[in-house]
Structures are given as C-alpha cells and as structure tokens.
Amino acid sequence: MTVEASRARERRITREISAYYVENARQLPWRARPGAPAPDPYHVWLSEVMLQQTTVAAVKEYFAKFVSRWPTVTDLAAADEADILAAWAGLGYYARARNLHKCAREVVDSHGGQFPSTENQLRALPGIGDYTAAAIAAIAYRERTVVVDANIERLVARLFAIDTPLPKGKAAICAAMDAITPPQGVGDFAQACMDMGATICTARDPKCLLCPVQGDCLALVQGRPEEFPVKPPKKSKSVRRGRFFWIEYNGDILLVQRPGKGMLAGMRALPDDGWRAGADGDAVPPFPGEWQLHEAVVQHGFTHFALSADLAVWRGARRPPDLPGATWWPLDRIDEAGLPTLFGKAVRWKLAQEEMA
Ligand code: SF4
Image 1: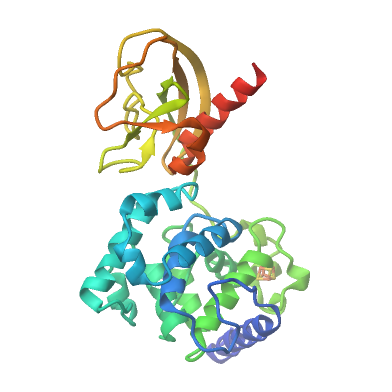
Image 2 (image 1 turned 180 degrees about the vertical axis):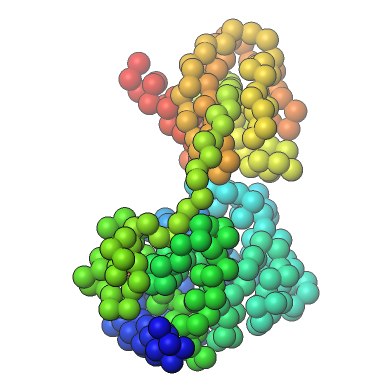
C-alpha cells in the first residue's frame, strides 16, 4: 500500500468510528454526550481509576456512591481512609483506593483542588499511569493524547493486524492509534474506540458484520480477528494456602485491621495465619483452644497467584481473648464492615452453613 493510500485508509477509519459514536455512544454517568462540553475531571479520574480491572456494570454503582458521598475531590481528600476503603469494598485491588485518597490529597495540597490539565502533570500524581493520564487529559481537557486501554488495544491490533505479541506489540498499537487519532475531538474519539472495543470488536465473537470499519480491517481480511491482539504464552499461577479464623462470641465477631503495608493494607478482615503472595500461611491459630476446621472454603484469584483458604471456627464456651488492634463487630451488621471480597466469601459461606444447620 502506498503512503497516500495508507493515510487515506487511516482517515476513513477515523471518520467512520467518529460517525458511529455520534449515533451509538454509551450513556455512562461520568460521560458527556458526543460534542458536549467536557465532563468534570474529578468524575473522569474517579471512573477511570475504578474501571482499571473492573467492569462498567460494577463501576456504575460505586461511582454513584462515591460522588454522592464525596461530591468533589476536596471532599474526598478530607475523608478518612478507612471510610474510603470500606466504600471501595467489593471492587478489589485495594491499592487503587489508597492511591485514590493520596491523589485527592495531592490535588488539594499541590494544585488548589483543581486537577492539572496536561498528560505529563497528571502522570506525576499517585495512582495515575500512562493510560489514565492520557485518558483524563483527552476527555476532560481536550489535549491531543494517544489513549490505549484494553478495548482500544484489541480494536487497533485487529484493524492493523499487529502480530507482535504483547507487551512488545503495545508500541506498534500505540503508533497505529496515534495515526488514527484526530487533531480535535480526541476525547470523543478515544471514547468511541473504547465503545467499539466493548460492544462490537469484543474479545470473543466480534460483530464484524455490524462494524463500521469492516472494510478497512486487516484482521478480518485475513479471516482471523480473534487471534489479535497476540498474547504472550500464559504462565500458570501459583496457589497459596491460607487460613482464616472465625471467632464469635455473644453475637459479635472478632475483626482485625490488616497492617498498613502489603496486601489489602489497612482493611478490616478476619484474623488469618499470615499467608501472602510469596508464601503459604503457617496455619497457627491466634490462641490455643478448640477449633473446628473447614478446608478450602474460599478460592480467590489475585493477579499473580490464587489463594485457597480454610476457615477455622473457634468452639470455646468462654469469652475468647482479645487480639491486639482487634474489634468486636456485630454479626448482624457484618455487611457494613467493608470486608475485602475474599473475607466476604468466607463470611457468606459460614452464614449459609448456619442457615442449613
Ligand atoms: Fe473488530 Fe471485526 Fe470490526 Fe475488525 S471488522 S475492527 S475485527 S469488529
């Protein structure tokens, strides 16, 4: 293909995707309609952080909860970290919630409560990586950046049949996205590509017959859209063993606050045996006594490993000893404790057992 033909093809792709968006944009609570004034940078930032590794459907509810409780970045900066972590419970990847708070405080302390407006300045804030900085700058400030999330990565890898495996192939994908990103309307264009990837150019069964750029898609010409983007060979995840401890007395359950550093830092949780990403737990209970063991009641996937956790239930008749930094929490209000998902699974399992007994 000549350079002119290639440029003409890129312009066609830009035009078709932009036109598709005007008619088919997803209505999302943090978005402006196509062509409308830019949305609030606080909303764009909050939604983008929440959307990292989480689906749009799950994020909608959390986004509404956060903006109603903390309507501005200044309100969020002034909140207690424990309240933010509890409100975040269920979204997973809790480092994001801690960085959210750090970032809000820095926006207030160093930028007078206004998000900075350039990709470079945004990237310097806690928890904001290359993608998020580019997305906020494009969507909230109309800066011409190159935005590549997982949906765009798939769409562009297919349009240009980029067959270098990820992560190396990312550079070619970014270059191709740069070539089709228009000089103006970059926020709408990025969101158009995100929507195309989420609804048309899906990971499985892409809807090529409905696709506005099917005539220019090299993966479709080659008859193998689902082979893009090319992934590196999968490593199998290690499985860690751990044990949670259920200590109940008089309708209350003993919860601990996890250490300020490491996995699920600062979160309320059931006491456990010290399992971590690099090692199994020691299975030793927090105090001696009669414990009833239920093996492998929780299976939970983390990014780099899986956890299989037992639940040991304390069977003593007298009030058990307190643990350092632990709290007695009413079992009938356990939903309000903001437990991370894997401990929530153990609680649900235990309560279901009691109902069946
Ligand atoms: Fe994706 Fe199919 Fe459209 Fe190509 S034609 S961009 S594979 S949906």
